[in-house]
Length: 194
Image (tube, rainbow, N blue to C red; front, side, top):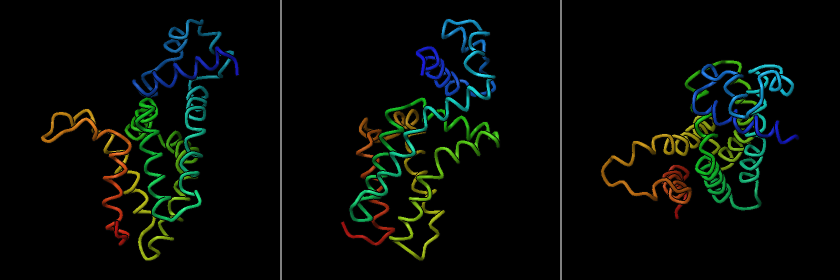
């Protein structure tokens, strides 16, 4: 991949995550990359194609990391813990990635949400459902999977507000803390004694 194309994707990720799809123009991206708009169109047919490439590029390895965490050769509870730690780490280490997911949920464009679900969520979500069914066959595995992802994601989404709430500690935003907190609740749900 050319350096220019890579730079376009990086700038696109930042702008789309900060402003949302509708508020970013191809000219905005071209200006930030220091190329002309026609040069930008040499790399991407249009904004939708650029945006889909941003999603594909930024999300490509993340879904695999999450699947890998869920399928390590270990006890089911340890696989779940590895998944939660990996998800937390990805969301903490890559704030643009976290913001882009938030923006897409707020914008609610069906085509982009469907693409995001297919490219990022479905592979690890299926593996997570299988793990949950293995751990607690009689539960609503889909609902539990959504709750697990939500516990991690929502915790990090409200981090800017949390600093103003009573008993706030900076470590509340670390992947290790989020994993420990989430696992303390899930071990009760799954009936596993620590």
